[in-house]
Length: 145
Image (cartoon, rainbow, N blue to C red; front, side):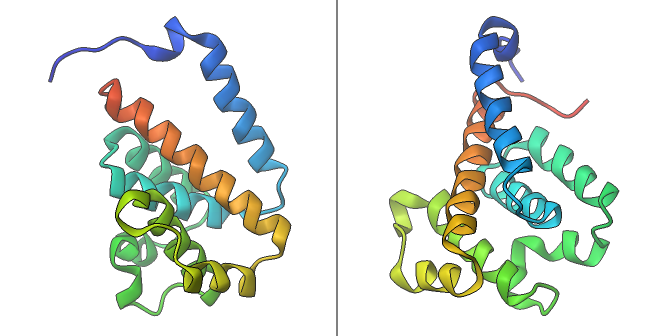
């Protein structure tokens, strides 16, 4: 693999802005476990090795089970995830694969069935934020330590 620049070192203001988004998410009231599932699943879709490693470890530290972590990429095929989590994961997959899928009305409606309007906005912020982190991770070839 070719070495690439350390983006945060060369653009600390961009890194600071990303951290600001994370701070907003911490204050959003969304469950930490849900945020980690969102972060991990988006990172799987986007192929960000650094973020997959980071968020799988963070989820474990927060008490996530191995069964749920191991089946997250096939969450529709299991019964490990709540209806709220399934709505979030479906919304996440659509917004992460936006060019192919758009934002289907049934998935949007499912989000509003399980989340308040404020939570839906913060969930969407979480999805946008991890997708941005993934672009930095993949774009600058970050690898787990």
